[in-house]
Structure formats: structure tokens, C-alpha cells
Length: 184
Image (cartoon, rainbow, N blue to C red):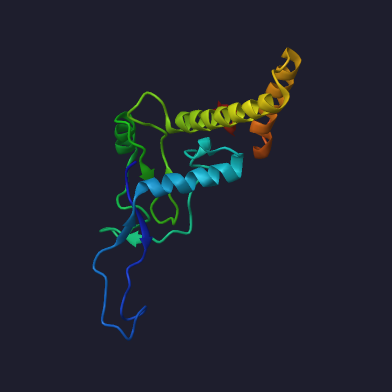
């Protein structure tokens, strides 16, 4: 993760705290990892899964504080990244956080990691692993109460398990369409 974002505008004694002689000289930035968490939450709200957090045309954070740069252009992030820098960072395994000039929003421009798999893939794998662990516990409880399963019961239990994995999120398939022609 790269590029911090502005958490709030600095306090000014004239407008914010007129009775106190205090003014902040430094801007208060938040770490990029908090952006990933917030974007995953927005992805869950929009798609039912956290794996579409990098679809910046759909999933982004807005209504953020902005600051002026040396050319009086406003940003929510610490630095502006042009497309060449974003490409280079992505190739290095970084997920750059970007904002557009004069807009109060930010977004993740890539889903890359140093490892061989994307963050989306790792989130999906983690969710599946958690589900399998919970399913195993449930099956052990059922076997302790009712004895071994018949093949028909196992098939029915597998169908119910897949439905329970997908239905709470409003999904009918393991594939999530984030944008047209993109399936995760």
C-alpha cells in the first residue's frame, strides 16, 4: 500500500479555536491500509464480497478533506501519482492510492502484491478457508449427534453449505461481476 491520505484539515486558531493560541504546522495523514479496509467495506456493500475494492469507477471514498499543492491544485492524498508512477508501483507489488486534482475522493488504482496473488484472491481464499473450518465443525457436531452420513446426506449437506456460503451475500455464484466482462 502506498500514499497516505489527509484525515482532516489542520486546526487554525483564528477559525477553529479562537480562545487558544495553537496552530498545527503539519498535516495529519492516515496510512493507506485504512483505505483498503474502508474500500473493502464499500465493496461488500456494493457487491456482497470484499474483492471488488479496486474498481475505482464504482468503489471509492469521498467527502474527504483536501489540501492545496504548490500549484494551488487540491488533493486528498499526500502526493499525486501520474499513470507512469502508478504502473511502476504496481509492477513492484505496491497498491497505490490515488486521487484526482480538485476532487474530494480517493481510490485504489491496482490490486497487486509482492506475492504471486492479488489481494482480492487472498481475501477470497481466506473467506473460503474460514467457511470450510466452520463447515467441518458443523459436520463433526452432526456426526456426534446422528452418526455417519450417507452419500445422499453428504450431497444434500454440500448443497446447503454452498447455499449458506452464497446466500447471505445475495450471490448465486462464486463468480462476482465487478464490472462488465470482469469476473473475480
